[in-house]
Image (cartoon, rainbow, N blue to C red; front, side, top):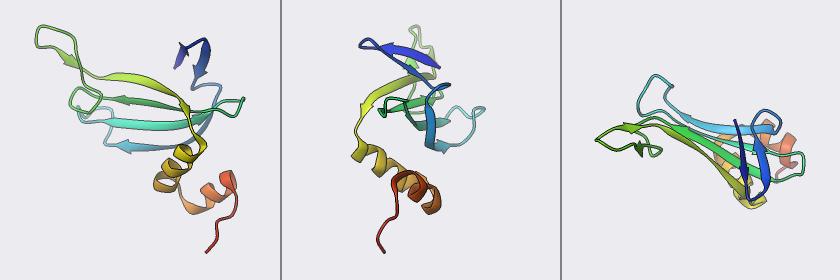
Length: 102
């Protein structure tokens, strides 16, 4: 997926995937995925998507609801680290952010 936001390009194909949180599968209307990426510039961003019964539900009028997706740019390093602490295994976390004290 690609999107230009405030004159900057965000592309999930060229950015480095860091980790994600996934609930269910794409066949489930409750499906939700939030993924963290890092651009070559070092900037972190989220890409999230979900089905029509998830927090990503979007009204299309006439009682029609569908899933949607969005980019969330300018994610701080602290926010990225917190997301990774919750969704990444310890070895991968330490490879990305360095060793953590016991």
